[in-house]
Image (cartoon, rainbow, N blue to C red):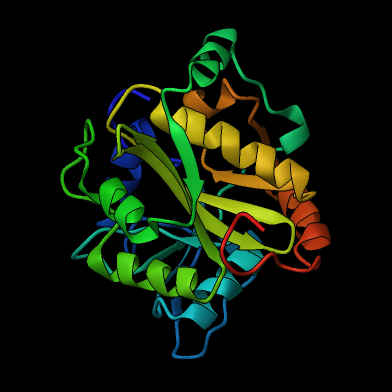
Length: 256
């Protein structure tokens, strides 16, 4: 990781393009963009437009966020925009059985430079993801409202973090949401080279041990493809999600 925030997919050139599009959400999309009501429900994901924009509005309540992930939808927006909900096609996913680790990263792991923990500093991880400067972006999509919402999901046992420590300081990490045997990656950060990569390796090893079958990376980046992530059609993603979201959720503090 090059001292920048990477969402599991929502980064780099697509950020600039989607940010520009979000400013004209009501004008330029040929398909309807659904305005959400107070009810925690969503239209079917296949109604989303080109880059995956499906709906606008609603809130970040625990019920709505869990419903969104259950349906293969996720929030992404920045102030002062309203909450935007996405379901891209194709979808970048990482099947744990296809995970690849380079020899160089394996050497870094063996060096023991990082101490890895889980769910010990969730709020610190998500705030670090929000605060670290990112190339080509002004501000952050991890708004204070998003921080509060995912901290609530963490307290409820659905959101989890992996932390990489070096000399007693948080050097990197990641967080995401787990439903059934599916993990939905949200964001990663590094303050020290390779820190978040080592955290990712530890996460995947844990998910494999617990028989997770799907890691949702959201939108394609070359960074994650190096680890074995690949694009699949949204229909295939939703089919896999439907199968494994029904498994018992591993709620509570990790590791278990």
